[in-house]
Image 1 (cartoon, rainbow, N blue to C red):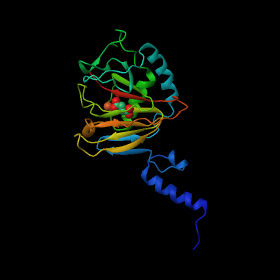
Image 2 (tube, rainbow, N blue to C red):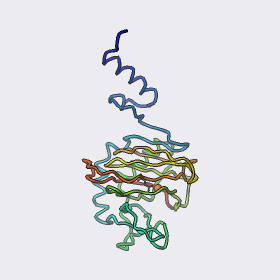
Image 3 (tube, rainbow, N blue to C red):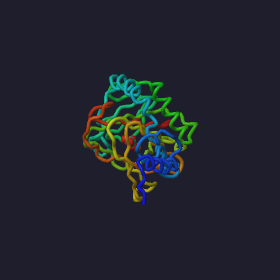
Image 4 (spheres, helix red, strand yellow):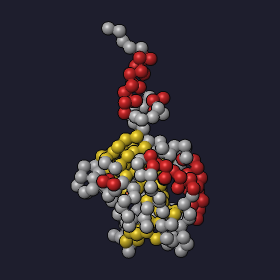
Length: 237
Ligand code: SIN
Ligand code: FE2
């Protein structure tokens, strides 16, 4: 039997890939991961969707974090969160001994949160549209910074007033393992590797899905250095 040459192998691998992807970007590379993946009903992973905007997003993050620095918030139970957080937009998510909530002002400075930059708004809107949520208008962006070892335990995003809007979550820098379960804490949790530029959008049947991030592995990324940045866009008010 004749063994296929490298060209033939590539051809059949590409056919297989094209059957699970919608675009041609990944078919240029030796990668088996689909460009977009439905991870649950109403939830989709758009791989590399923010890849091209990543450096602009990071530049805008510089002035946001100069005005509203990353800080480790305290949970209502008294624990210091391992993830560093700040916000931009009309409303910022905060946590302290009094509870989880949104506030229009940064408690550190007493000033309104930095305005959401155009680059952030455009990306959130185009990712939501791509995921089937063209009406998404975000008024809150929580910015999470994970250093090695930082993690976010399984939780639901439920401090927002309106669950008809989806969540748009953008990953930048070091890769992380994203955990995505169902609407009950007991539901099976699936794990997805999120890399720089990946965007996850969840809404409708998945809007209250439990999700979390496993402890970040150490590494060095050209975009962010020794950390992962996550931008979570929501309609809070
Ligand atoms: C979050 O659930 O607020 C953040 C998710 C992530 O960092 O990917
Ligand atoms: Fe969350």
